Image (cartoon, rainbow, N blue to C red; front, side, top):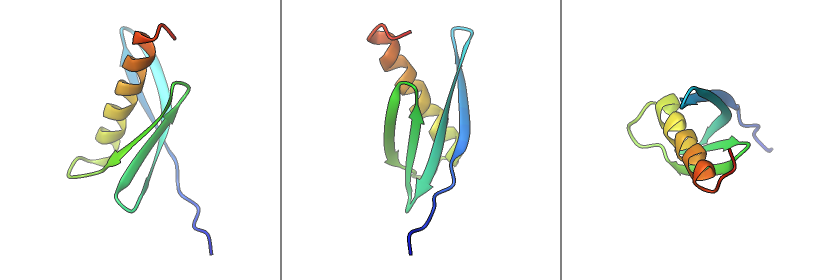
Length: 69
């Protein structure tokens, strides 16, 4: 039986602009998805929402470096 993962909203403010994504956790792996792509990492000891904000910020920073916003 396939398990459905719960997705939670996460947001960061970069230079006054809010950016929103979603995150899910499965077997200790956290995945963040946004308009700028997705990224995953082992959760470790950080709270889920904190880790999700860090990943989202990295996605936004990479998009900014590519000139996508």
